[in-house]
Length: 309
Ligand code: NAP
Ligand code: GLV
Image (cartoon, rainbow, N blue to C red; front, side, top):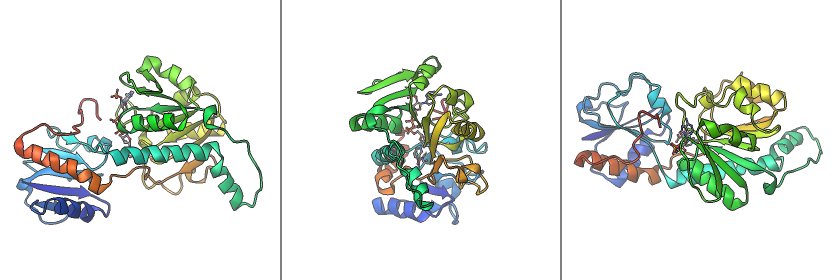
C-alpha cells in the first residue's frame, strides 16, 4: 500500500514530509519520481495535470487536498469508480470566515477606495456604513458558509443564507432551493459566494441574479471563478447596479494580465488565497482515511459523486 502525491505547485515535499513526520513507516511518492503504480491505493492531489490519475490499477481513494473537488470532475480521464474525499478542517473554515469579515469591513469603511485615492494624492472623505446597516447573504451554507455566517452574526451583522436543503443555523435567516432564491437575493446587500462549482452552479452569478440584488449591492466570490459570468459582472458594475466586487477566484488562475478585472476600479482582487489547507491540521484526516482503506471502513468526508460536491 502506498500514497502518491500529485500537484503542480511547489508543495509536494511539504505534504510528503508532513505525512512522513506523522508516520515514518508510510510509503509516499511524488508522481514525478519513479514509483510502483500497482502499490498506490491513495492519490493525494491538488489541481493535478489532466490524465495523471490514470494507470493506477489499485487506486481506492482520490483525496483532494482542498475543500473543492470541481477540478477532479473536470478531468474526463479521472477514474469514475474511485471514491473522492475532500478536506473538512476547522482552520480552512475559520480562515475563510476571517477573510470574508476582513473584506466586508474594508468595503463598509471604504478602505480600498482610500488606497486608490492615496496613490493619487486625493484627500476625499466618504460616507461609511455601519455593521447594522447591511444584510449579508451567503450563497452556500456548508462547512465554510455556515461558520462564516455564524461568525458574522457574532460580529453583529444581519445574516441570511441560501442552500440546496433547508438549514437551521442560530441567528441566520435561511432560504433553500430555487423557489426561495429571489426572496434571498432581494434582501441581500453583500453577497458572499461559497457554493461548490458544479454543473448546476456554473455561471450562477450572472445578469439575472445580479439584477435581483438591491441597487449598490456588493459581491464577494471566494468559491470558484466559474460561478461568475465575468462579462455580466463587469456590465452590472459599470451600470452601477453593483457597487463593487471582491474576487479571490477566477476562470483562469493566475488571471491573464489583459483581463479587465485587473484595472477595474470597483474590483478588488486577491490571488486565490482566502483559505488554504494547513498541512499539519489536515494530515490526520488523510491518515485516518488511509487506515480506513486498509481496514475496509467508510471514508471520512467522501464526496457525493451525483451531487458533485
Ligand atoms: P460544502 O460543505 O460542500 O457546502 C456547499 C454548500 O453549497 C451547501 O450548503 C450546499 O447545500 C450548497 N449548494 C451546493 N449546490 C447547491 C445548489 N445547486 N443550490 C443551492 N445550494 C447548493 O462546501 P464547503 O466546504 O463549504 O466549500 C465551498 C466551496 O468553497 C468549495 O467547493 C471551494 O470551491 C471553495 N473554497 C475556496 C477557497 C478559497 O481559498 N477561495 C478555500 C476553500 C474552499 P446543501 O447543504 O443543502 O447540500
Ligand atoms: C481551495 O480553493 C479549496 O477548495 O480548498
